Amino acid sequence: QQQVKQSPQSLIVQKGGISIINCAYENTAFDYFPWYQQFPGKGPALLIAIRPDVSEKKEGRFTISFNKSAKQFSLHIMDSQPGDSATYFCAASMRYTGNQFYFGTGTSLTVIP
Amino acid sequence: GAVVSQHPSRVICKSGTSVKIECRSLDFQATTMFWYRQFPKQSLMLMATSNEGSKATYEQGVEKDKFLINHASLTLSTLTVTSAHPEDSSFYICSPRSSDTQYFGPGTRLTVL
Image 1 (cartoon, rainbow over the protein chains, first blue to last red):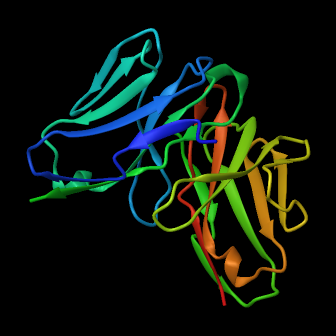
Image 2 (image 1 turned 135 degrees about the vertical axis):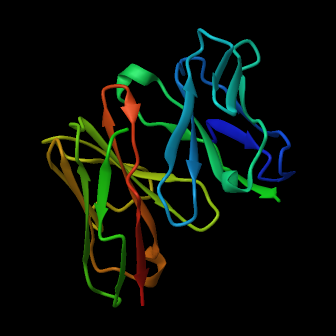
């Protein structure tokens, strides 16, 4: 059973455009929602994370929007650049329990120059 | 950010041999270690979870006698793939957790001939 559902599977965006990746979860006990960026042949790297007590978090060109009632959260990449081309994974966990992170299936982003 | 190293970064071995992968958290203590495997263009699949000094807990379908995990200290964990077969060829990623944050190693590409 997929705890976190992610879409789209792949995304192509023009340079300068906005990339939007969506995730949905079912378990209301989740209280930590990170996004990871992974380049080919490399391990995932934490990009940005949010807790459910806020609806939006912005770090540079990256923004997480969180809708607690809908149990959805999304990653927005503003002014997308070719260097942003990577696979992005959303995840969810119960932060202080030491339990595993549940990952989405990933989105392959390609930013066209 | 936290530094996690994995060694080797890539290994090619013959079928039937054993391969040991080391994961070190260089500037923090990992109370919990997660080991993942990732097939091309797929998400991370949790293999096992281990706490320092305790036996690892394996996910359903992961053979504990084939994938030996040792978490002897708060900064070192090892994954040994015993009697490797071509179907074990994959990208193995360790993920140490410190309190409420989970980090990822750079991964080890295992190719079994």
